[in-house]
Image (cartoon, rainbow, N blue to C red; front, side, top):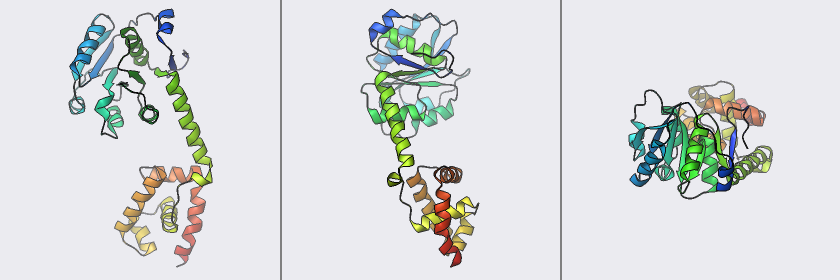
Length: 254
């Protein structure tokens, strides 16, 4: 189901029969493709598939992430087909690739579907996840759809993503699922939201700046934020600033 009025509409993929009943017309626009795959048989296979298409052009092939990081793409590529196994042992590879190549749209090709991994990939900016066993016709269709800004997602993954966001919404509203913060952590948060620097907070709480930094790292981990700005926004959204101010009163009085 595709919403033609949306730049980032979803392409819901059903079995091969659906493909045969509705074949897309070729795009007149040239699509520049990068392939990152550790197995040469897949790189050669995709090279042969795309060579028969006038609008699809492979501009680079690499067999590992380190080589991908050093690529110089001018003009920028449109689509990256990335082997899922190259992501094993990494945590921030997708955001890093997005940062290095802002114009590129990422397709991850994986042998197995995993709910948590699938949801995480889409959250980090992947535009499509496809199986290693995908047919040539479906692969071509996927690349063309993603190249024009759409998202390629199958029915099972749609359900996983929806359920993940429902669970997240419940966690945001259920007090029992909120992260537990100590009185000291709440005091630090209250001072952070007041715009205090670490040195000022340390002086007010009678400790050292390094101790405050250590506390902040723990607070970031508990709340799932990365810096002071995200912490302040989190506090506003969850009304945590009120609780933090209450916790900070005894320290201020002392």
